[in-house]
Image 1: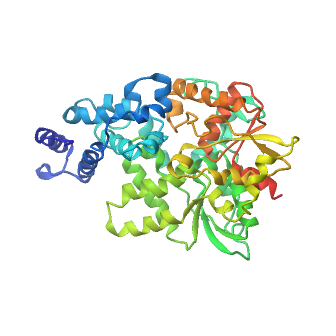
Image 2 (image 1 turned 60 degrees about the vertical axis):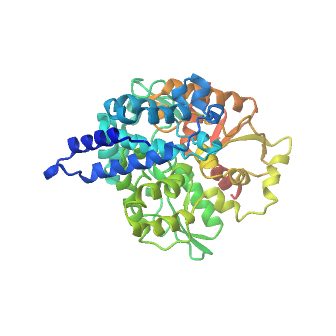
Image 3 (image 1 turned 45 degrees about the vertical axis):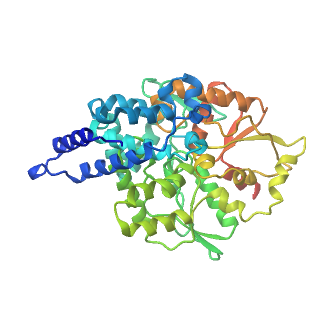
Length: 459
């Protein structure tokens, strides 16, 4: 059992301590934490401590620290039990040392849902220990308010050149003049104009179309990679698809959930659902696997148990949600995928990095490769361990920069070994990390999303 009798008493004591309602009754927040506790009790019992996760964890490969691997984290959660709330900050610190790449769960012989467990545990511990002042502001004041986020992004785009140093003209990377904020990371600046401001609903609706899709760009494509969004629109129009763009864009909630801020994550999910319910569409298209993973897996985990009536809606939405590579590849000639592997000697060499959430969480791997097929322009050379994590892991890449960089350098070695001209990846966050490691090494290798290459191909 996750909680013994004494542990249950202690949990109740914590609930009473935090409750502000008359008669010391648990408030809704404490009731939510109690449900998380119950879920964890069942989930943790499935781990057999076999150690299979040790062979696939990118963090453990670098540190050889038992508490950095899934087995160690699960053992920590199980062993702490009654003492977890005595030292919530310490336990959370260990759980935060995780890329949430999903490799452990993908290879677990017992099918332990490690990602779900870690996200629930982070929410549980953050509910008790609270968020850091910086995360609290960024998540609750900025991310949770799309209009405010847009205003601050606009200000950032306008004034960022005063504070950044351009690093690689080829990759478009920059660094901050005060490295304490982002360490020595080379990053991609905010776009001058976000993607959602480049299209109107009229632009998004061709006169004729075989099907209707709703395109959900997500934060990174909207504010940093509008070129990816433009490539998606071009690809969809080329395939005679009617496209709907949501009037209001909110984050998918994954950053908040990863930080343990379940409240903000739920708010963002509901904001998006309210937008989606305004429209009728055949598919919801994303070009960010983390957004797709959140919609298909995380939203039901958070919302389905809160309201029985929303379960069928979330199930239908999950079934309709597709990565752009899935949608386009399903409309291509099956023979086209073979072309890139037999490109001419004059063709540029391209290699592909499999994003963790795309391959490990959504089982999508061949479709992005199909998009970059062009025997005249490109020849695919697979890198070693193409699905090894690049080391970004969202905020992990900032909070644990040195570890992120060490993991990224292993990926860099694999990329350089292919002698490629371009490295493609179907994840904007991975593209940020790949741009960073290539920029730091002064490489001239380009980083592109598969849909960008497809858009170039169709002219």
